[in-house]
Image 1 (cartoon, one colour):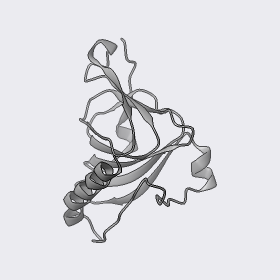
Image 2 (cartoon, one colour):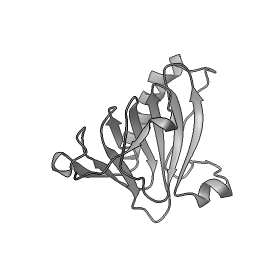
Image 3 (tube, one colour):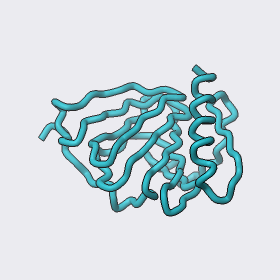
Length: 153
């Protein structure tokens, strides 16, 4: 599984590096050397976002999930989420936001989820420690684009 995750991260990096400035290589591994120095304030939050870089086409960030998101959509953003560490239960409920069109998917390190704009979803950490994900947003992420929804209605 670790080899699969490393391969996934190398693929993601090879796709993004040509479009990013400054052009530097970055390797993040979940096999014990994922060295991210989260501040005390970030560790105190159920969800902390650490922007890594952005340009006019996309943004890249680390997300630390110690609790659970609220159900939401991103009206104008597509997301690719690569779980680096921890275990997450990803709730995916489609464009209607109804439970009849969705499912819950457990995720572990190396798993990748594509979430198209307008697709209702939320993640909840199910690990003893916080989970960390590498998230790519197209176009660049704007927190105002996170729209709460109520699944099942």
